[in-house]
Length: 324
Ligand SMILES: Cc1cc2nc3c(=O)[nH]c(=O)nc-3n(C[C@H](O)[C@H](O)[C@H](O)COP(=O)(O)OP(=O)(O)OC[C@H]3O[C@@H](n4cnc5c(N)ncnc54)[C@H](O)[C@@H]3O)c2cc1C
Image (tube, rainbow, N blue to C red; front, side, top):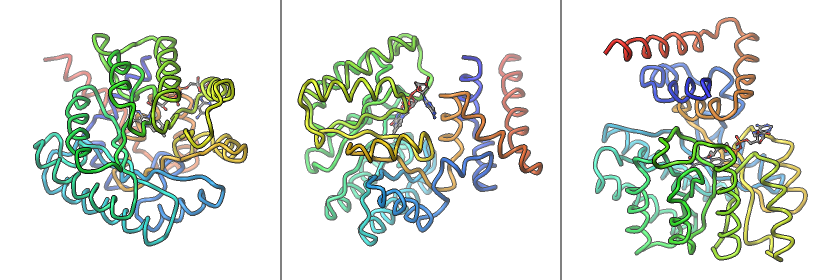
């Protein structure tokens, strides 16, 4: 738990985020981030498509506080849509409302999203709204509600650690939904803290959407959940075109290929870009073993000191908070 909090703390550190953007993919991030530009990302997508794996592409970035940065992100996503269409790859988009200006102004964000969803709809490309922390949950649903009045190429994410997820999944059952456990640190008045309770709710939500919903994306690296779903769909005669499994780029690669080979729809979440830091730190928070990704790099290349800087800054940050 301490390590989890440590990496969640690091994920929110602005100074380190800026440094990370400046110095490119470091700390082993290159094994879980598909390059820093569109060409590299499209190459990775093509390599996955060859194995029958579809992709959902995330132009990395979040919690943007300046309009210029949000507009730049919007333009980059529009370029990604062009690249998906131009290269005829099997891929769609995942995006985060805070990257498009949700923290700046709701209507500004809505307009940015409308432009993206509109362009994607012309190419029949699906847009998934990733779900972020609890503070952004309700406004994100409201953005989706407003845009769905005009577009049907939108879906979102249900996070099983939230108590309210059980109501949200009913309300949004006619959407294509990705179901996940949840990646942010949330307080106990809104979210389960206990792993078993989160897992139990995860299964409950998946089963509900498989039985009553539109298309279900089961996004997890947890083999116990995957095995449970395999049995559940068999018992309930749920056809393979009603759901897919999703995992993050670079994680459990063997299992990703294996599931695709077994004939399940499979979609890899492919993050790319320079703003990789927050995403990468959340992956370390989820699974301390992922620190192996770092240590392999740090000890192979003695020059990589960013982790040391990160840890130092985090500890200093904690000390200065305590003083106040
Ligand atoms: C495609 C995708 C999209 C996501 N989108 C969102 C989002 O929009 N919002 C959000 O809040 N979160 C999102 N997440 C993150 C998610 O909420 C979880 O934080 C994350 O997936 C970790 O939970 P888990 O279900 O993978 O398994 P965990 O609970 O982390 O692990 C369960 C068990 O699975 C096994 N395991 C897990 N990972 C590995 C591994 N790499 N190698 C070997 N064994 C392993 C271990 O036995 C582990 O104990 C997304 C995740 C995925 C895969």
